[in-house]
Amino acid sequence: MNGTSATASAVVFLWLGMVLAISFLEAPLKFRAPGVTIPIGLGIGRLVFRALNLVEAVLAAVVVVAVAVGTPPAVVVALTTVTAVLLAVQLGVIRRRLNRRSDRVLAGEELPRSRDHVYYVAFETAKVIVLTVLGISLLAQ
Image (cartoon, rainbow, N blue to C red):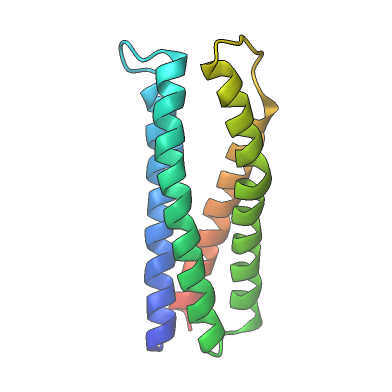
């Protein structure tokens, strides 16, 4: 393993840990806390996910650069690309729709459950799988 692969691997596993901790632990638990209403939970969630997504974008850029300056196998390039695309769709499409919806809920509008949350979780799950495989692939170099 060279220094570039080690850096990329460390960043990938940091990113993976953040996604697991926030998306699969913090997000669902906050709505179970006593006194947390839907508007309060949405407000907290928007702040937390805005911060997470900003950090994810930075980590993705670091991984892309690390992979680009190295001589990775095609599988690493493909997994890096898939991860970047998953994040881009989450931020550019799904997250925007969720933000518009949460604006309406925070304004007092009562809306039925949104499928966009299901899509976001599906993309998070796919991202966790791809990040895991990418991290292991980088370690194996």
